[in-house]
Length: 272
Length: 148
Image 1 (tube, each protein chain N blue to C red):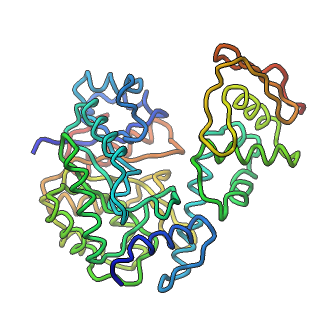
Image 2: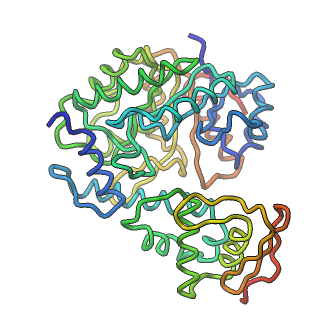
Image 3: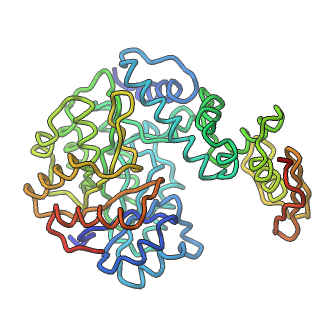
């Protein structure tokens, strides 16, 4: 599989200068909804492409887990962004973001039911039919569960990936958050996930709020998440790792230290 | 429970963003935590689209935004901030920085409160909270700052 490699970072306009200055960088991710494929690429992204840095479009608004068919215009946009960036793959979430005409403004969890598996699989297939490149699916961090789950998380995910042939975008911070909030063992989930399907992994920091761990992307990566990165890399040849940061951007030295910590935990070359 | 995923998803979203009742079977505390987290995230998103409005309110921004947004589904960060700024302006509680940001936005784009804002083609002057902004050939200029 040709896909992202090494340690990367989520490209955001606010840190474009910092990202451009990372000498060893081989891949970044860009929020697909922020790219206008017909127009010029955002400043900085075009330069990274010219340097040979892979850019992976990451969708956040497709609502693959919605009971209704995915909006064809959103699929067309994602496909056009992938083509414009000459991307190796694209990624989206196993979640829904709108229902009944209302936008949630965030990724919401699905019931782990056969009906939900069928809805996701149908939407993933509709999306794959339009995409010029493979699709990786990311399980989300959820603060609550549905009352009538029929499957556990590993089985739910494996059924969707098996039925669609999609790749796995594993968010290590989400694994940590879900285990924390449900009182589960995060490594037990790692042992049951189809790790051979991982395209790359997300790493981010979060914070405690009212007794829950929130995957905020605005805080430093905690030691427990780095430990889980090491656990993941022991189980599988280290996958490409992507640091996600949204808002409250820290000084460059702190971002560099976080990227270096990911390289150290995985054995990937440093990119700073 | 089958065949009704669409209806159940709609109920859940309504409970999270539109003041709807908690659907049966869900644990109240975790859903409430998610509802609060959504409001916090929205407040940050709108602050990024309306930086002067948020800065003008300072430490009061999260509470001001959350009180307004609670039970009100989003129309996107641009329109959410616009609607809130207009409401504060009507109440006479828009801070000077927010007034200047609102006047500049009103001069640059036409927004009817229902459909997405559209850039104005014709020259325009707009006022908000004592601030006056003008737009000519797509360039916006603050003619008079809001009184401090």
